[in-house]
Image (cartoon, rainbow, N blue to C red):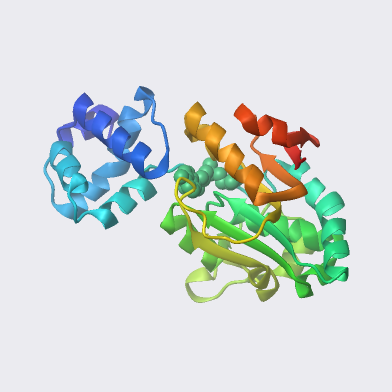
Length: 282
Ligand SMILES: C[S@@+](CC[C@H](N)C(=O)[O-])C[C@H]1O[C@@H](n2cnc3c(N)ncnc32)[C@H](O)[C@@H]1O
């Protein structure tokens, strides 16, 4: 079905798009340019069908209603962009193996914990890659006090990440030695998939968390990955977020960001460059 044909299925106006754009911004901080008007249509039609609604006008009224909290979550889940893959931006994973790995060994040998946060983890490929890159340096880190917190606003991708089951083509970027050691072939509905072994599960915790809201974690992280997440936010939101990350990272700790992202605003003073899209907290 072409975009035009689909648009005829449910009436959809510029005003509906503006209302949905406003709801997504309020809920998730995500800014939708007008070029995304047909994407919104195609991603939300299944919600209109599920709710038996006849137009986007009705959907907007429904989602604005005081009892529609769970529908607002569905709207966010439908409109987030979750593209990710294992060992994405491999220079960061090399830094994990060569810099964070030795730091984690040293910290845990001195009785301290080592904590990493993957903020905007999508379906889990990022935090599992971080765990694999640490284990590539020192397999014994799996038995140490090393922990990766992985969070995302989208509850569907968090559930996927918790399952830790990936189709074979998805795990292709994982080195064969790491794949055979830390994944197993699935069974039942996962028969065609590789499933993470308990070693990786024990190093990672997945939670739903909206970066625009309160962060309930206590203490600071040794490293934060927030890659390809803030591209969807406006400049003011990004500046606030960088400052919040600065507060959440220990002095000397690392912040890894996406290839098209830059730290801007007052937080620039709080970080020094430490490699390609890699920063160290002053
Ligand atoms: C393109 S993916 C990036 C995944 C991974 N970090 C990577 O680089 O491969 C962006 C993720 O950010 C999440 N996200 C968007 N807005 C968010 C928010 N306000 N709070 C938490 N996560 C958010 C999306 O749900 C999506 O899974």
